[in-house]
Image 1: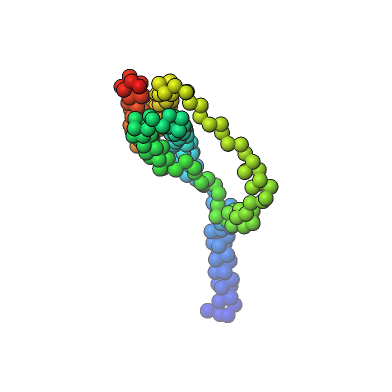
Image 2 (image 1 turned 90 degrees about the vertical axis):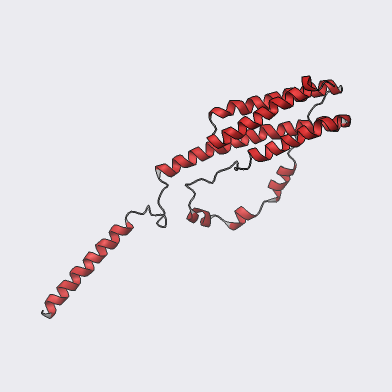
Length: 201
């Protein structure tokens, strides 16, 4: 093969290699080679968000009930032998309901985007923001009836309200979490009975 022929062949091979390289890189979206999340991943994120929101609502209801138990115990210490076991159960329910997490990291948040964020903006808090957070008023204390019997009736009503919320959430809950909600709701119904008709004050 002549020198001219070898040069022509070399140029042809170089051109083919360049075309292949362009083809490999043209599929990227231009953001450091990061592709957009697929439809399946976005759907999985949507489902995860819905479950996290459900968990947050359930945990909030359980913690609200726990706060009411604490308020009644503080107002009527003599009821401690009767209420402490029930409060312990409610605390366990609140913990179990939130064990799966109540927040989701968006799939669209790419590592490159996170790297571009300013470290000072994410790692520090301005004095103004800190002052604003500290000045947020605390929620008012849970009202408790002065009469112990009325306080127990109010606590029983709070138990019924909580287990009704858990029961209503069963329709949209995933199977495993639905079983947990059903168990917590059943315990709440038993608590309401024990607080009123089961053991009169």
